[in-house]
Image (tube, rainbow, N blue to C red; front, side, top):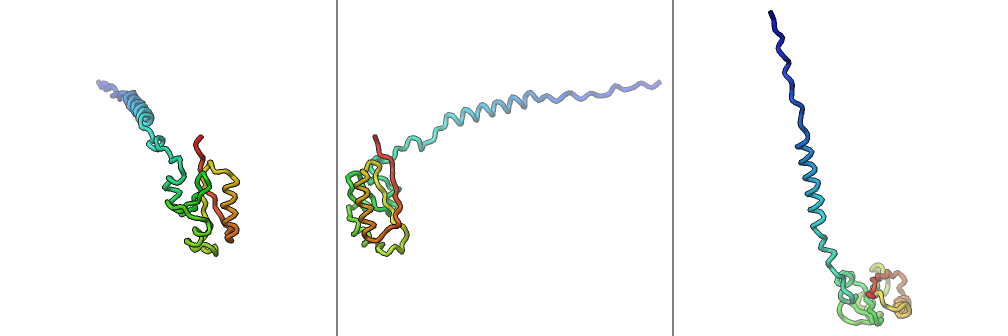
Length: 132
């Protein structure tokens, strides 16, 4: 007499531990992402446009709140600045003018008019918002 051997049953795969690990990783990354803050949020831009190193490094003619023009750290007139750059003919690209956000429009217009009188019409205006 032949007896039939019972078929060996494979135990079902238990996926619950895998699901637990995935959820724990999800919770960890959500928590880790919310705890780590961006350091750039703490950086306050300088209130005075003359202190802004990014604008000063562009070689722009800087116009402060009172309408005075600066090249780097020294005060300079528009005609002297153009002569120092050798920029009277326009061969070196557009003129960059960085104006403070609190500068009055008529004062800025005077600086732009001085540039136009010197023969320059290719002017790029860089502005920044003033503090209130």
